[in-house]
Amino acid sequence: MSVSIALQYVLVALAVAISAWAVLVKQFPGVARSLRGALALPLLRDGRPRWLRPLGRLLAPPAMTGGGGTCGGCDGCGPVKARNK
Image 1 (cartoon, rainbow, N blue to C red):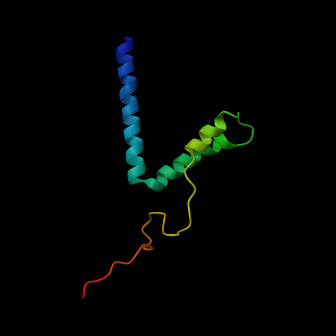
Image 2 (image 1 turned 180 degrees about the horizontal axis):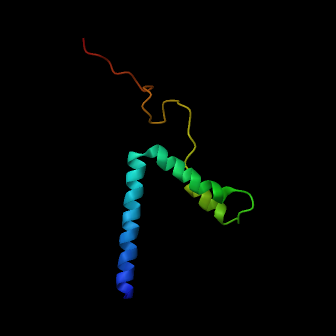
Image 3 (image 1 turned 180 degrees about the vertical axis):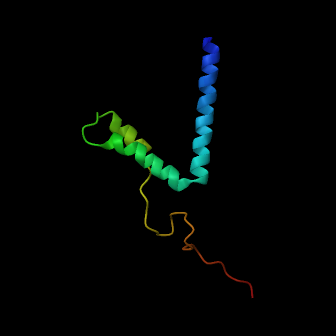
């Protein structure tokens, strides 16, 4: 196998992996959040090398906030639209 074909396979595999991740995040956000946490936790444990901790923080999902109206969720806490009478 020549180098150019191997590079092509690597680029196609990378494109497929990125596309699959985008679909996972869009369609199944809870699963994606759990997966990010599962990948980040082993990197953040005590006894790991210092260079792995920033990678773990980068992979970790953002902290969840409890309501407040700025979360972008669908709990109906935004402004109420006026009805036409």
